[in-house]
Amino acid sequence: MKSWKWTALVLLLLATALLAQRSRRSGGYGGWGGWGRGERYESYQNPREIPQHASGEDGEIAETPNWTNTPGFEKDVFTFLRIKRSSGGWSGGPWWTDTPDADLNLAWRLSTLTSLKVNPDGRFLHLTEKELKDYPFIYMVEPGSLSLDDEEVVVLRKYLLNGGFLWVDDFWGEGEWDNMASELKKIFRDREFVELPLDHPLYHCVFDIKSKDMVPNVENGSRQQFYPDYPIWEKGGRVTHHRAIFDDKGRIMVFATHNTDNGDGWEWEGNNHYYFEHFAEKTAYPLAINVLFYTMTH
Picture (cartoon, rainbow, N blue to C red):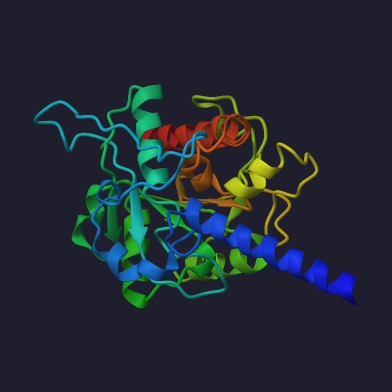
């Protein structure tokens, strides 16, 4: 009995330490997604307004550099637009998961690795805001919790059919997939997701991507450095899928990256060299650059 009690105490202390570590690595926002500060996040217009929280290998906050574009052409740039939304559905985090670091780091990498002129601040918008039509690309994270109301369904359908593009990312397991797919079914009752084959031009337009590799959350990915067999998948989602919804002319309107977390690859790129080399540099950034290049030119 005494041995059992000591074992239980050790496990409790270990769990407490891990939870504390998760909170620190998330900037104290109440978990990876920061559920506790919804009202404050609703007030932000772009990720540059939010203090960054991702740390480098030295434990210090790794802030993304700022930059400027040619005066007079500030709007003639690509803007990474994250959609504000309510949460419901099966499971999953809120719309601000991984921000601001994911948004800002990706924008920085796009501006330095490509010839694309990029908005250094990014943008947050609700689907129902009139400015939506000014942006050809939108991003939704954690769509396992996606819940669209009737007005959002109408707006999103019009946006996508008129040339807009939606990327849904960072959701795991069949339950979260089913919720996301059922919400998108409200928009396109006559269209289905199809698995995007690796010979599709999207995978070869900039980087030559030959496999659909998984990007784990930073905790799981970092542990694999010391425990090679450590499972990096979540919620039973062992196989990464890239699925798409096309319009009548074959243009990708919706791109869904399931059982993978590209946002963490961007957010925690500097957390440690192993995570950057194996997941951010190898998978998360090449895929993002290809997706953006292909969709912005097709």
